Amino acid sequence: MQITVILPTYNEAENLPVLVSALFSLPLDLRLLVVDDNSPDGTGRIADELAQNHPGRVSVLHRVGKLGLRTAYLEGMQRAIADGAGAIAQMDADFSHEPARLVEMAAALDAGADVALGSRYVPGGSVDERWPLWRKGLSAFGNFYARTILGFKLRDVTTGYRLWRTETLRGMPLGRIRSSGYIFLVEMAYMAYCLGYQFAQVPIYFADRRWGKSKMSLKIQLEAAFRVWQVRWNYRDLHRAGQAGRLAIS
Image 1 (cartoon, one colour):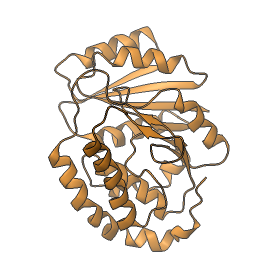
Image 2 (cartoon, one colour):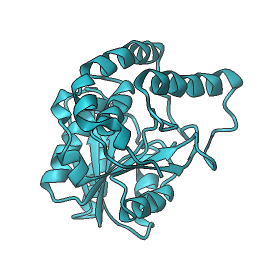
Image 3 (cartoon, helix red, strand yellow):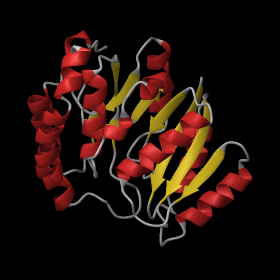
Image 4 (cartoon, one colour):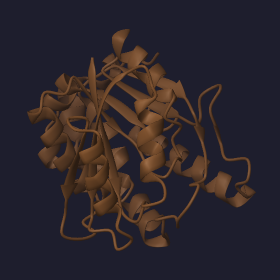
């Protein structure tokens, strides 16, 4: 199965070359699509150099500015689907997501799942031990809050580490997604849940980024808390039509 990994970047010049090397060391048929939002630190230029060094395996989508996670992924998915990817991965470019876990996620798709989620909150998963208690509590509560409102059985609905079958993405009305920031991840998972797709949950260790500055902000967190209610309302038709009780979680 040919997998395209979409890497949205903004100021990831230090991380990107090391991450590309780590991904290409995996026993998987990988293609990488870097979606760069005109990073001031030259990430786009480095991505172009990596594309030259790995012809046919690395491609770059340059955007005019910081346009957000939602459009980065949706534009990247559109291109990956058009290029014939068998599966499409969502992954942070800051080493928060351990590249090696992609192997287990691919195995979950081979076993029949429609989407594999890298989960911090299933047995074997964890978050950075250096996180203070308030940050661990905020992350856990954010998941509990979204799961409770939306009726999810999934343990980690805010995870950004995911692997989708291309056929699954084709079956989802992605044009309906309106959220920006990290609530986009919740909305996309809820859409798949409502449509009855099968999820696998693969335990991951979520590490703090190695270099650079976190892009999480209070504005993003407040938007997420409010937007969860809008997501529930906006997808009530899909929830009924898909009979979400058919969801199988492995």
